[in-house]
Length: 261
Image 1: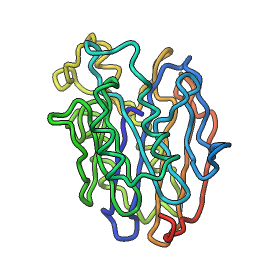
Image 2: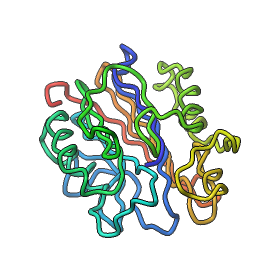
Image 3: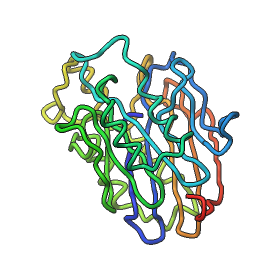
């Protein structure tokens, strides 16, 4: 997961709304979002190489997402997979607060990451490159997370934030097409606005759009998670080819039992 817009209790009718793109090497094997065979209440994709995931939700309303923190100079080759942080939360029973605190205490063993874990009542953020590293409770509001810390105003993050801040959430039950169109914005930022993260300028330029298209690395899928106050929920995902062409779409509508969250 490389960019995500997260609205938590920001709208009285929509307590949760997530719109996200996962960027990855095209030759890294993965499975599209679906209920996990051994945990059928979990809906998420699977990274077949490390057996973790980047974004998921349970039918009880637990959700988690993770982005990598871009800092190539500090990569630890033998670090554990960051994707296990999402999967462990989704398949476990820890409260968001307790889980986030545990991650904050053990996060130094992983390469750089940002994690948001929550349910329909509360959500927490942990970034293991923040100072200090701690579990941060997220107040009701709208957040954007990319490959730096939460709400870092990178051009791609602010571009996605502006577009989705203006999107009327009451249209979600009619169609998700407009949100997927926003997520497919491949407009690159001007060079003078690019961050400096230790990679070449042409790479910074390529990675500066919300949706990335290139032969070897790019946006592999776009995902929307939306939960209505009635308990109706939708998990929808579109997978893309290296050319940015939609390959398949999976929709998982379900009803959340408020007594089970």
